[in-house]
Amino acid sequence: MINEVSKRLWAIESTWNSMSDIDREQEIDAVWAFLKAYFSKTHGVDLLVKNKRLLESFKEGYASTRWHGNFPGGLWHHSILVTLKAITFVPIFHNICTLDISDVVTAAILHDIGKLGLLDNSGRIIKPHYVAVKGDPDKITYNKSIMLSHAELSAHNYSILSGDKFSFDVHNAIFFHDGAYVDGFKRAVQGNETPLMLAIHWADMFVARILKI
Ligand SMILES: [Fe+2]
Ligand SMILES: [Fe+2]
Image 1: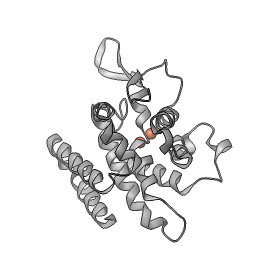
Image 2: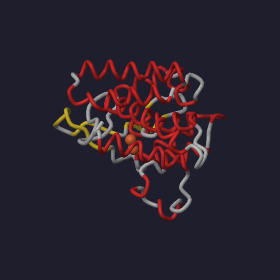
Image 3: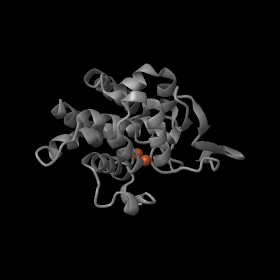
């Protein structure tokens, strides 16, 4: 299965820049179908499959205001590809430390769910993370009434959506997915990073900063 993930990822990485928007949508749909087939019992996938409203919001979300994925659907593209990338790290960690593939998938697919905004426990958006710029509805900016960073909000949303499936390790990997860019990282976890935290961080960095997706 991991070989299949690597092959898909390589095909996407090497052709993404030359793909049309329609091809990209089809590619992301195909990866989502693949994730649903292989990880249907994994909490993060199961949560999105069972919560259609949340999935619809996710597929309309922005990944950023002006960097990678700054269009409706950009957040979904980014999250799907971070998930694929993070899965490919599992064999790299093998024999060095334990990296649970279910936790990898859940943390990766939900790591930026705070970019939708503040959610309630049914997945409804109470306050959006991004709002339209006044006088220029084509542009978005941060919703200043939300006092949390998107990583903090993602961890919060994960907590309230997860119920008895909550995992502290997954929560922390989401909370600190920006690594040392996160305020308080030094005080909180530097020197005590977990394998999951680093896997999500580097998968995210690679997809956002190198692929710019
Ligand atoms: Fe993020
Ligand atoms: Fe991200």
